[in-house]
Length: 292
Length: 236
Image (cartoon, rainbow over all chains, first blue to last red; front, side, top):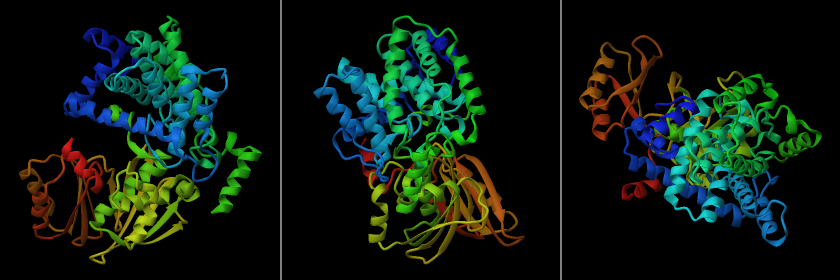
């Protein structure tokens, strides 16, 4: 890849007169030695898996093996249409879809790690709801996935994308940044605006710990995916409106690295602290052990 | 750069819920199946560390067995793998290990081949994001990531064996990215592991197997689609 930072990415896009998604496709093809068509086809398959996961989560039983989670996406979906939701509309839909994919993941369904399984709901949630709303073609969405991948590539190589290393900010936080940047581009924003969206989004999740109850990718991972989808829309809207990340996005990524590195081990996917060690969290863990 | 391309960020396609505890475990199981070279009739699975503590909730047990059935990480049959394997005649046991282990997510497998009756022991670790490292095969120290097509050659420790092996690989026009050799003792049993840039053809494997002092040759290719998926791949 010919870029290491988001600012390098934006400059490269300008030089070549390409959007982030189109540039990443070129870079990926050069890196892998496979044709652009082949790489695009692989990503198209992945988008197909994301669609299936949304559909499954909205219509099938997603009760997890532990029995702790499932069917919340369908609750939110039904509420979105039956009641007058506070959020409602496209944001409510993105939230329901993100919950759906996360619940499919928790119930051993098929998903795409974006960038991890723990944060697999955010990008499909935002992408599918926006595709339905704006009538975008699948090819447009797949190009958006390359854009999201370019942003994630920079975050992952300058900071981290796993909860065990950097807390939930690294998983859910990165996914929100990736979704926000990609969506900004899909809505006609410039690469520079997309980069601002990433910084705006990441600032909102700095410090978020990874504290899964019982060590399972369920509580609070699933609802954080739902919230994440809404935040991604908000960050993209701010960037498209002209709001800038005064602290450059590359510097925000460095802060994520700093905060994650300083995070105690009990808050990095060990279930040794946070929500996992609340009285209720501990009781759930005991119950799960007894069930074994 | 730790992450090399777009598909290390968007991907892998996998059955949930955890890239390390499910996708990684499935890849370890599949690597073991391919090293054994046949369906196991007996599988003793011993979990250590975080694997031992949470394997049921993460479906690590089903993922390992799915891998032993040669399923890729996104095979929809993974959740039912234990039933499928039992129906196919696999005798499965799960244990929680004690003592030293190399990584928080470690599994040790002892397998008996269905046809040959041959035994294989293998230790694998899941190091994050679905990435794995096989660290031990039959008591030989290895470092097998499954990122590339990998050839495992069991042979006698013998003057010039390695030279003849690399010569065969060169004549097949395949580049070696990484290689390691471990031996039990001088002039005793040895295991050479070669990571290749492209997959080895059946002819190449045959030529390696025909070398004097070579006992067995196995190919591990985790990027290869599963049995079910192969037909799909050729039509696309």
